[in-house]
Image 1 (cartoon, rainbow, N blue to C red):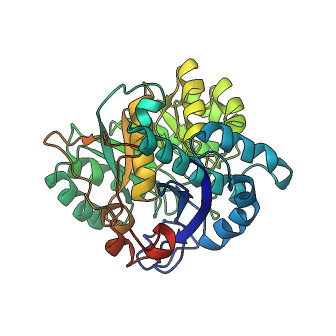
Image 2: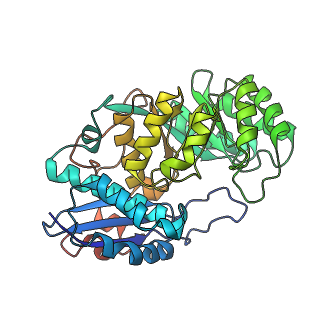
Amino acid sequence: MKITDVRAAGLRGATPEGGWTEELRSEDVVHTLVAVHTDAGILGLGSVFTSENLVRAALDVLRPLLIGESALEPERLAEGLHRATFWLGRGGSITHTISGVDAALWDLLGRATGQPVGRLLGGRHRDRVRPYASLLMTQPEQLADRLRPCVAAGWTAFKIGWGPFGRSGAALDERIVATAREAVGPDALLMVDAGASDSAWRNGYKWARRTADMLRAYDIAWFEEPLPPDAIEDYIRLREHAPVPIAGGEVLTRRQSYLPWIERGAFDIVQPDVTKVGGISELRRVGWSAHDHGIRLIPHGWNTAVGLAADLQLASALPDTDLVEYVTGSPYVDDILSTPWALDSEGMLPIPEGPGLGIELDPDALGRYTDAEALLGADR
């Protein structure tokens, strides 16, 4: 089975807010789907957290390295792409785009062999996983109004992030967290994401240390991105002294970037994003490195249904990955599959058992947000 084409299609029209200072509009494209086509008529799907224009430009570089290659060797091909393009710089649009290609190749291998990707990665440790509803912070009363319907719908884990947190004062920060804890109840998992990778972030170690003390009183499962993403020394100190677990790493790419953070103990929980880090192949390697150092991997997942499907397969294959992020209210997650996601009676999300990533896109639904025919082909 040979690769005949690699196509990209950006999602637009319902892009959710990101909480950034330079906030997204619904028409902005930051989520791009990739499809790898083959001479056997089978295609694989991946997702990239990068604009369509940048993905298309990256594919102009990557496509000649892929056409005619076997579609059944994802790790070899992805590593070859990384090595062939190292002179363009690790990370950024090239690495992000390789992420989507790599996931699509794993999807293809699974479809060709009739196996879910998780089994191909070495075996399924679990057949379901707890998703956490990921919501942007707002003023306390508005946040409670957003959380309560999620509780009623069966969600048992929640992450609140960005918005005014860390930007308006300690009193408001605590009111937000206290209100969220009351809304979700004492038994739910609750995580807090400061969003310190935002371009306008101004807080440092002392703020993070004081805030971690406050979060302990509300039984916060982890404190995410409390410091700027390159402040490794401060992360190491914070993890050593904070009374709550420290999480981060969503902006890093490739396994090599994670090594100093893992080996020096900067995180309790490391959070690579499968749509940026280099794909399933790279995220799996980060996961096992973290496991060997007593660190949990919980993937960052503010992306699409295809990205979530990849996270679910990885959660089945990595022993410590018992949670996945679920962007609540995003049509790119909820509305583009032929069979929508559904929680079970215990608030768990079944990991697809079908071949590949285990999902099928609904071309008509997808067509509301992109040119589905150009991505998938006229016969889809």
